Image (cartoon, rainbow, N blue to C red; front, top):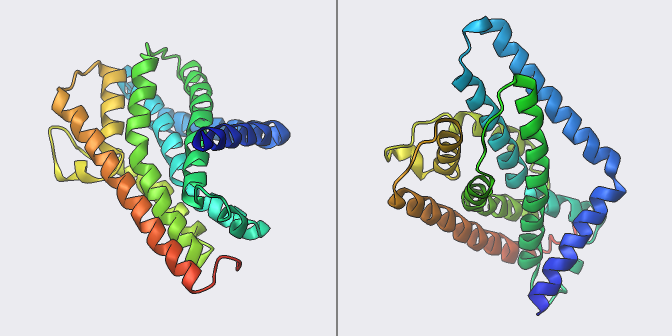
Length: 254
């Protein structure tokens, strides 16, 4: 019951924040759309009319996948830095459920709101390119969630580092560009690159949405195992850094 109350509270808090700072939310949508326009017209300027329809479709889906991956991986670290700046980080540890559960539900709530954001971006991107994809949304959202769990683990790892070092913005800058390259790596049939977080899931969503590729059951089981591994590892590493931050008395510092 306490877990359900915590989940609903964090969801309401996030919804209130988006409503209260609606200008910032709207500006984020506008900026991300302008970034896509820059990519689209850049590709058109370089390649001209030789750009195939499938290439445009892959670019649309790939951009949406990159957006939600970027927002998911920044979740816990951003929360830790924000709570440290406002001086409320220590208060979270008064919760009987633990701060890690609070951060987890915040991240899950953020994923739900990110779904709304990326859906808007998906339709704006399709309207811009003139390529209207037939999207199986239950599959699309389900696979996104399954794949993003691995990035939730990475986000907790970075959040743990943030407890000690406080400022880790440069790491996010590096990962933002690294994600673009990672999503272009060949992963199927199984290659060593498939061991990386999110990459196999991103490839699966893109291939299914653009080309209608059907994958065997073992591939989906592997994606689930990959995501759960990174999630478990991320939570474990977060707790290690958490204990170290408490031992070094860094919770109340920024």
